Length: 321
Image 1 (cartoon, one colour):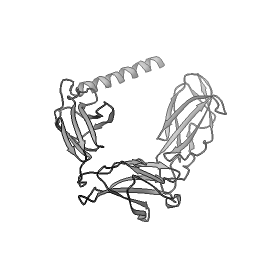
Image 2 (tube, helix red, strand yellow):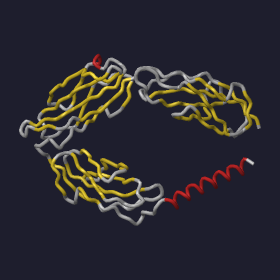
Image 3 (cartoon, helix red, strand yellow):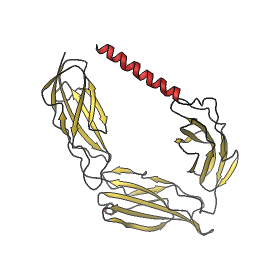
Image 4 (spheres, helix red, strand yellow):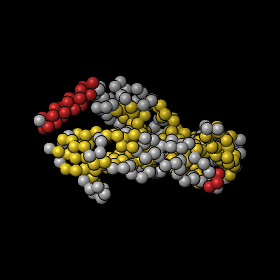
C-alpha cells in the first residue's frame, strides 16, 4: 500500500511539472534585444544603466557583467527592463537572456563598454563594501569601508542609530580622505538598527555624490527556547510520515532577528548519533520513519545574529510496524 501511495505521489508531481512546462511560453528561440550600453560605449562616472527589450513569456532576465579577463562581477535575475549598477572604472562586457519557469532564451551577443573617471560626481555613487547591507551581529561592528572614487578628494561618513525612540546621529559627520574608518565599541553600545552613510566630494568640480547608506543590526538577546507540542512524549505511532510541532521559538529583545530552527532526531537519548538534522524557519517539520524502534527528538533555535539557545527538552517516540 505504501509503495502504491508513493507511485501516485510521483505521478502527481510529474503531472504538475508537465503542466508548468505546457503553461510556460517556449522562449528558447528568442533573443533579447539590448539597448544600453551599446557596444564599445565609453561611460563617464561609476554608475551604468542597463536596458533591454521585453520578451513575451519572460518572467525575469539574467544579467551578467564580466571584466575584460572574463571574471564575472555580477550574475543576477532582474524582473524589470532597466537597472542601474554601480561599477569601478575599467573595461567590461555584459550579456543578457530571458528566463521563465520552464525555459531560457540564448544569451544576447556580448556587448563591451568602458567606464572612465569623471570629475563630476553628481551622477556617481559611493560603493559601500563592509559591513554588507542588512547584516545581523551579536558583537559591535566598528570598521567601515567603501570603494574609492579616483576623482574624489574627500568622503563624509555618518553613523545613525534607529530604535523605538527614533533616529539619532551617534558619530559624525566626519570628513576624511581615507576609504575606511574605525569607531569605538562604546558608540555601538545597544541592540538597535544602525545606518552608516557615505558621500564623496570633488573640490575641482565642486560636486558631490548622493548619500549611499547601508543598515546593520546589533542583537545580543538569546531567542526563546522552543516548547514541544506534538507528538506527545512516549507515544507509539505506526511507521509513516510524522509531523513534529513546537512553539515559542521567536527572537526576543529590541531587534527581532530572523530565526532558524534546528530539528534533530536520534535513536540515542544523548543524540551522539543523529538520524536526521533538519533546518527550517517554521514551527513544524515532517519526517518519514522507515524503521521501527525508539526515537528521540528535540529542537533548538538560532537567530541571524548568531545567538543560540540550548536544546529544548527531548521527547521519546516509539515507532511500531
